[in-house]
Image (cartoon, rainbow, N blue to C red; front, side, top):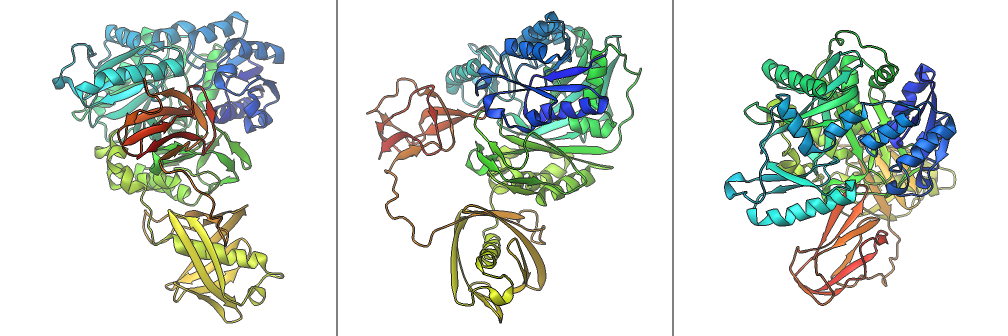
Length: 639
C-alpha cells in the first residue's frame, strides 16, 4: 500500500496528482525551486522540500536531489508527472534502487522509447506502421517537404519543417543545437513531412498481469510550434476501420516493450486515412482529462493502483459523449506566440467546466517554466455541444494579468474549419492565425468608455449619479493596438459622451457599469491594478470575433517627451536567456532585413531576433548565456 507520494514536478500536474492522493487518503510531498517557494502546489502539499536554485537544470531536473527529498520526507513512492524527468529511465531506476515505488512504466520500457529513432526500429519489428526515414545526405527535391526532428525529448523542441533543399543543412544544425540545449542530446533525424496530416493518439493503460486497455482516441491536431493547443476525445471523423487499426497498433506497441502504467501512442494520419507511428510517451499526457471525462475514470488513481500491483478489469468501461480541452497560455499569438510575464491578478471561469491550473490569483508568471496557466475541459453528449460549451466558458472567463491566448481559443473553437471534423489537420494555424488574431477595431471604445466611467465613480467623493464630476472629463487609454481618448460629461442629466451618440448610462459603480447601446443592455465589470484596467462583458450579439474583454493602460495627461529609443534598436520582447548568436556575427557587419541575429529562450521556447532592416550592426552588447529583462538592448542596426 502506498501511503505517501512525492511528486517530482510542479504546477498544474503536481496539483492534479495531489488531488487524487487526498481523495485516496495518501499523504503528499511537494518539491520546489526557489522561484516556486510560494506556488500553489507547495501550499497544498502536506510536506514540501526545497530544491535550491531557480533554473530547472538545478532543481526539477536533478534526480539525485529528488530521490534525497523523497527519502527525507518519508515518502514511499514517486510520481513524475509530465515533462522534466518523467521519461528518464535513469531517474526511474534510481527511485527503485532507493526502495521507493515508481508510479510509471519500468525503466526498460522508458529506455526503449527514449530515442525516437530506436523506438521506430522496435515498432517496425512489432508491425506498427511507420514513415520511412530520409537520409539527409541523399535527400532530393522530390522528398520535400521534410521534417527534422530531435531523437530525444518532446514538446516541439528540436523540430524544423524544411521546404527548400538548400535550407536542410542549416536546419539540421539549428535543430541539433536546440535539442542539445533542451535534452542534453543533439541527435536528430529526418522523415517526410506529411502536409495536411492529423495528430491522433491512443491512451493506453497496462497492468502487471498482462492486461492492456486502449482507452479510445484523442485528436491533438491544433498545434502551434508543434505544441498542442486544443485536444479532444474521441478523435472525430475517423472510420471504424481506422480506429481498430490505431487501437491494435497501440496495444502491440505496449506489449512489445512490456509496458506497465499509463502511456500514449501517437500517430500521424494522412489525408487518405493511413496512420503512421510518431512516438510513444511513457507517462501521463497533458491532455489526459478529456479521456477521463469520456470514460469517467481517474487515470492517476489507476496509475497508483497499478503501481501497488493491482490488476485492471479485463475490459475498460464504455465511452460516453465528447470532451474538449483548451490550453490557456500566457502568450501573445499575434506577436509570434511570445510568452508573457507578470502578476496573474484573477483567473475565474463559470461553473460547468473543469479547470486544471498550476496558478491562483496573485501568483507571478515568471520566465523559468512553461507559460501554460491552465487547462479548461468541457464534456457534453456530442462534439458540437462540447465545443459550444468550452467556447462559451472561455468567452465568459475573467483573466486579469498577462496577455493570454484566450481570444484565439474561443475563435478556434468556433471556426467553421475546426467545427468540421473532416477538415482537421496540423496546418490550421498556419492558414488562419492572422484572421484569428485580428480584433474588431470598433469593439474596444465602448469598453474604454466603461473604464472611464467607473474611474470617475471611484474618484467621486460619495459615488452615485449625483456626485460624480459634472464638468467635461477626458481620459486616455492605450489598448487594442491604439489609443482611446474618452470625452464625456456625467451629471444629473445623465451621460453625454463624445463619439457615443445614443448611449445611455443605466447604472454605475466603481467596478460595474451598465450601458444601453442601440437599445441593448450591456453590463461591464471593471477591475483596476495600478494603471492597468481590465474590462469584461458577457458575449455580445456581435459574433464570434468580438472580444468579451479588453485590457487598457491609463495614460498620463502629460506624457514624458524625453522617452526615446535609438532608431534600429532591438529590445528584448520578454525576459529570457540569450542562447546563441548567429555564427561569425560581430559589430560592424552588414546585415539584411529579416536576417537572424540571435536567439532568446524563455518559457521552454526559442525566439529568433531578426534585423528590422538592411544596414550595419553597430551594437551587439549581449553574449550567449546572458539573462536579459524586458526592454534590454540586444542590438542596434543602423539603416
